[in-house]
Image 1 (cartoon, helix red, strand yellow):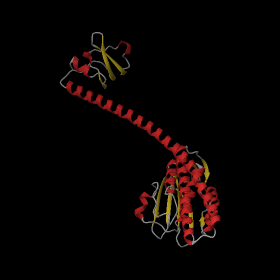
Image 2: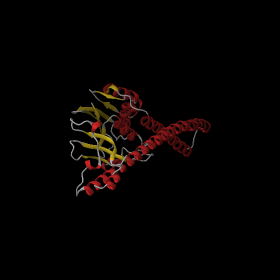
Image 3: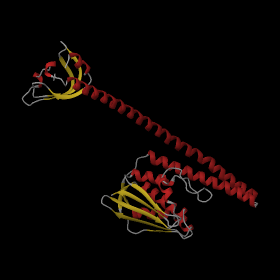
Image 4: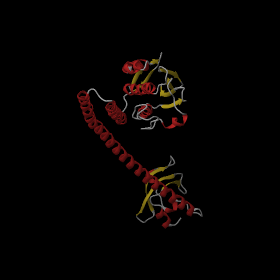
Length: 323
């Protein structure tokens, strides 16, 4: 290999046997020095045990020189180019990740601020609406319809603000893992939703459930969302919601089954996406964020979630969580 060819290798990362020596050179060429026949490199020498690194001197004659030298040069230059490309892409990826973290943090702060600021005007609307109702009592039929439209819109906005705030909090704050008795958890959820359950003559049925590692408040939110979902999408029957769990090799699989209206399987792949609604607001209220929040909570716990449903046959959510 020519003297000039070795200059072309500056910056290349290489490893090959050194001629007439029981050693290998692994590292990166930096430059030549002195009489331009001594190589300066960054890396390491893989030496034969009986050789002393301090006494090992390398010259151009130590390296292969044969008919394949041009192929070796091409290979090493290609390796250098690939390394430079990977290094550049890695640097770009790190910069993009840092920018994404910054944008997400700003988005979370913005969501919190908007959620907080919107609560006050909504409270004012409700307060003045109550004053208006008292002053206009009794209302005509058309006035009652107008008031009902306003109150429905306010309730939808309140639910949306609440869900946006919950979603932002789950994204922003790390989960706090501890041992959670899921039977006691479901009991707490049932107590928290007792008025809603009683209002529709519903029942939540469960028996023995396991103790798992998880964030209590987020698991509470998870099962509360599922049960509320079952109450909202009830059929003509009294709602019956069954919460069960079965043990697998490395996980627990929970199921939340109901006897509600169910849904067409064509919609199942997208129901965990934010703001997806299968019914209009006039039929069933909701923000379209509830199941998206459930999906995020399960992912944070290192689990997975799927759904099985048919129109008129109810819905079953399956939640797989690590043991």
